[in-house]
Amino acid sequence: MTAVETWHVTRAAYAQAGPCGDVALAWPLRSGRTALVVVDAAGHGAARAPFASAVADTIMTELVRGESPAAALGCADELVRRCAEQSPYAVAFAALLHPVLRTVVYASAGHDVAFALSDRGELRRLAPTAPMLGIPLAVNSCDAALSLSPTETLVIVSDGVADSRPAGSDDFFGAERIARTVARSLLEGGDPARALLHAACAHAGRQADDVAALVARIGAPAHGVFGPARHFRDRSRRAMTHARRMRRREH
Image (cartoon, rainbow, N blue to C red; front, top):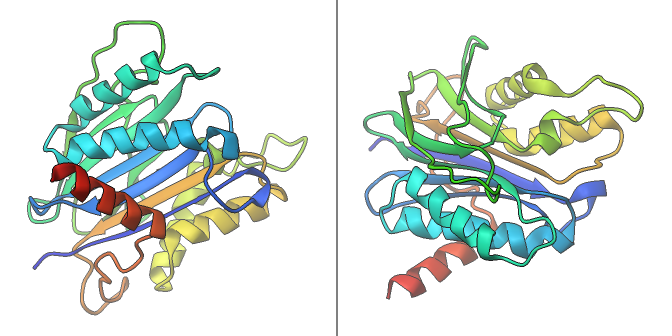
């Protein structure tokens, strides 16, 4: 059976533990596909966690129900427009990863840092398909699709990772460092999402924004550069709680 391996991590600004305005979720569906969700709410810190979680939960619920990523983002946009938040805006990325067909169907509401990374370091950017959620315009999100080669890995991060920089500097962590960090971690058999968090924080000297990273790879070989696929062994406690909530809703 073709496996999918995922790694995901979030952390609040100023290296604080606990929920924050960024959310990263990955979950296997009954169809055999894997649902991927990354949300970055406007603002940062624990105060933004309920809003960000509500947006992410709405998107994941729709994906579990069989809706497309674009439809899921549409439901999240309606939620954001109805909420009474002071800053009711968020960027979001939703995808369905098919391990047998090696396809990705995704929709991106203003999410800028998402790409497919080859073993040779080549990047294929997954461009936004709609503006961010909550803007006062009638926007219809659309789905985009691509096929992944056996050497490609999906990388989706929030701008808290990509825009990390030392105080007073314009030396952003950026896509190239993200790619190198992921590639090095996979080569060493590590956790590329946590490697990104640590590398971005080390680069900046201080983590000034919430961060989220999600990395997914199809069909990791049994022996070779990337080692045996753990097949979702790195599920976070929050993702497991979320899945139980989804099952209760289904029943």
